[in-house]
Amino acid sequence: MLDFEQFIETAVANEDIPGCVLLASSRDGSFTYTKTFGKRSMHPDRNQLPLRLDSVMWIASCTKLMTSICALQLVERGHLTLDEPVCTHIPELKDRAVITGFQDDGTPIEEPHKTPITLRLLLTHCSGIAYDVMHPNLIQWNAYHKRTTSPSGKILERYDHPLGFEPGTSWMYGPGIDFAGLLIERVTKLSLEDYMRANIWEPLGIKDMTFHLSQRPDLAQRMADMSKRASDGGKAVFTDERQSYHNEKMEESEDCFGGHGIMTSPEEYFKVLRAVLTTEEDERILKRGTVKMMFEPQMGEGGKAMLGIVCKSGEIVNNAMGGVPMELERDYGLGSMLLCGDEPGARTKGTLIWGGLPNLYWFVDPTTGLAGLYAGQVVPYGDAKSAAVCRKFEAGVYELYEKSKRTNSNL
Image 1: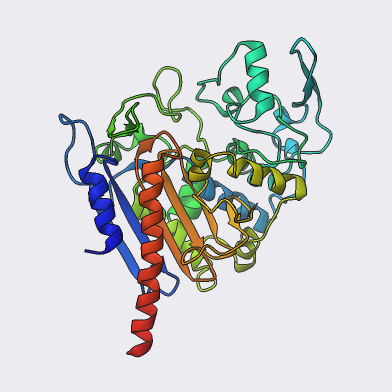
Image 2 (image 1 turned 90 degrees about the vertical axis):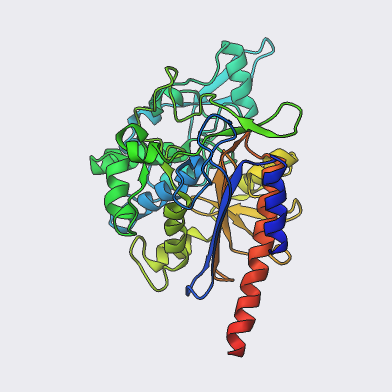
């Protein structure tokens, strides 16, 4: 057994994680790695079958990559541009206020935003539309109004708070790509699920993917349970707590949340990563030039500086954002974070990375020609033990890939 596989087996045996699904592949297909570990549930009375490549998971923010691809398809077809105001199609955003400060008594100071919100800003989290549990201005705004994050299953209701900053001047992770999904629906007159099915899923042979699990009972039967880290930081335990794809009544969201709403299996999602990696040879979902642009830095100095500050704010946040070495410079491409330097023995400069809240992580490394996915179902995000397993996998799979190239060159 490989060293990193033994590390993962030990983590499963110690109940640090319930299990995980791993996939990796080279651009030319000469190297592939797939393996599963552990079981579908930590609850002794629930499904104890082993995790499989086709086990269904909530992939959360892994959804953002697909929504970004859909938006870029519409740019290619001339239905949208990256830099026109999106309020043409989403007028609800035209007069969205921006928080510019607070009075001495804590009253928020709100003014109309001056710079138009564009698709480019939505895809790079530079629009000012931030998660209200992450941006300091929005946290203070919620406290003043004595409100919490809305549990609504509708995008415009859940994310009805002001902008955290003037569009284009900073960066903060948020639901901008949910609004990009709404933009796609407004332009195409299709639900985001129907558009994705016709323009990503069917071209790539993906059948097991949905925003609405109630419409796919076959997928619900294969769903892996969620686990959470015990309060003492020890073992992972079963949880049935409401996840953010549910509304306040524990029902699935009415809208297709393009930022976090997909249920699918790791093997199906990996087809999307391979499609991005292999665009030079196969333009089924995007043109070469568009994918090249996805891998180019998109942010101004204000956004780049804030991204660096956020990523270096603590281990949990850095784990959730791909576990990149703190000293490594980062930017944002179109839809995902972009590495601006090499990691020793692993991901190289120009790699796109991101993941999903239940500790899923993916990368597409065009220089090395390798894509990989670590898929788990553990909360909270940025879990240290899940991140440690993922980092072992990434280092191990790069080592395996390098060995395979040397072996092939000697044949």
